[in-house]
Image 1 (cartoon, rainbow, N blue to C red):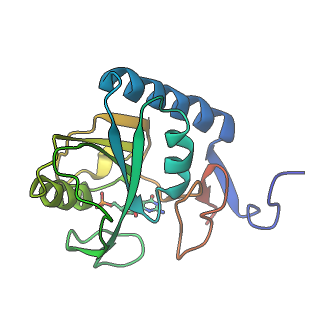
Image 2: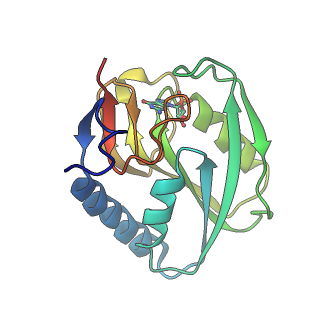
Length: 179
Ligand code: 5GP
């Protein structure tokens, strides 16, 4: 019997739990190596990155602070408009800190472009991006992607924190809704 049989009956698995676990551990090990014992602030972009953040944080062997940033894009459910608004700001300044932004997916890149420009005004020591997923076919602006979990085709995906109209965030794998 699959996990969550009712919720997942309309879904086709794209990346299963074992692949997610293995790749997240690799990303965490790389971040651990790259920062060489320096303290890090993980900035999680709400809401889609909350599951990834929870798993990733537990694979990073560094002194970590964790903060959250709420962003809302004016657009419809599945399309980013590039006009982004901060709905909930960081709880502490990041001035002088090494920051890794934890994102669920980079699609057009417009949201991350806005966020990088915004964070730059706060005087961090450095900013890098860690995105679980990347859809290169949809790129409108190039942002430097330092850590990427999986490159995927141009399909709308759900699960592992990602939603469709708030549904499916609690599905433990990445999936496509069967249409
Ligand atoms: P971008 O500004 O890069 O176009 O879009 C980034 C945001 O759009 C992501 O943080 C996510 O909220 C949403 N998004 C883009 N593609 C997908 C997708 O395939 N599935 C879901 N659930 N959200 C997506």
